Image 1 (cartoon, rainbow, N blue to C red):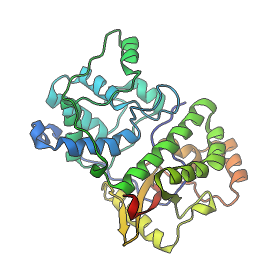
Image 2: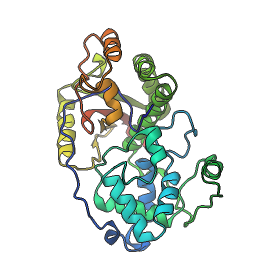
Image 3: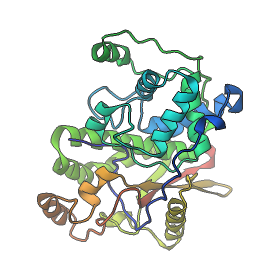
Image 4: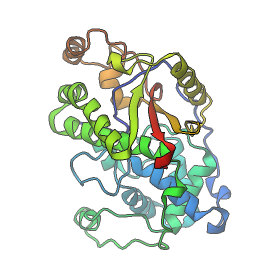
Length: 328
């Protein structure tokens, strides 16, 4: 079964799909040399954004939602060994995902096509340049996997990457992305092993306990909020609706969201959007997307369900993270 990234299928809110970027952009012209970007900044960005799905710590077979980032580097180096070609080739795919232009057909077969991203062209180019210039963290199993699949040994090229410290990341964003990764990993495990109906049962029984346990780990209150809840406990209040609408507008403008941070003398409140992809539509899509037996099960588990009728790349809700300023 093809599954993919960001399958934290718990929320929903009406939105517009992001506008397509212009094709034919010369991404390499944005990054001519390593000196044109700050390695520490890009390393922190990769840790907070890319590794959420392209994890180097997730197991090889179970619970993985996307190939590790080093695998992306390896395949694109095969196709584009020169730096300028690598930057352009990888950047073009990330901004315009296509099965025809992908260098990782096996990954698409397993995980599905990468969703459209809302990151700025210049940031995508800098990440691609960093991936070429620096070594990317590798899972312990990757070298053996590469040897087995390609019949050749793997030795990564690149500069040793700079260390990432907690000060490089927004603490609210860091918690939101870690929570998303943990829920996604568990949900993907159910989908891959037992199918959509099992994943639906998982969401009903395990999603909230997982976020509650993460709240204890990070000393924060972690919730998922929406104006179209499947679980009524996730319904947004009037103030929260304002920020949901802000995220709708950002998606419509194809703008990468940095979230919303509200801080007083004692607490920090952070909101961050949750968006759909094609795989989410198996439980949250229109009538044509949801199998009859799955719809029947949804209706039984959630009699007041409002979280259907979505398309890909729409806002379904947001993370709500609240923590004491003493914990920063």
